[in-house]
Image (tube, rainbow, N blue to C red; front, side, top):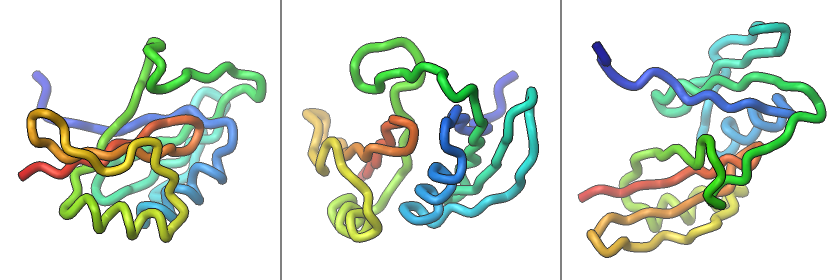
Length: 126
């Protein structure tokens, strides 16, 4: 029986860069540091979203998010006032691949380029 969402897992070539990104852009905080399958593992809390960062081999390939490749395309954070959130995140250094926009269904969304090529969606629901 599924009881809810558990975590986001990102495989990283540069662990500390990814940690710094989530700390700077989203006020994330490191919860623990350890190891899994011989690679470093850093668990973070990003506004209640558990984010697990796992190291990988130096020459590992990378998914190209948003290009129709298989694998994780993006994950999303709920926000209030997407326009002001975008202004605030840009001041922290966030780079937007899609500026705040309204979908045909009336949903407000935006996309940020995250660490390791991971896209992060911002979603404002009425």
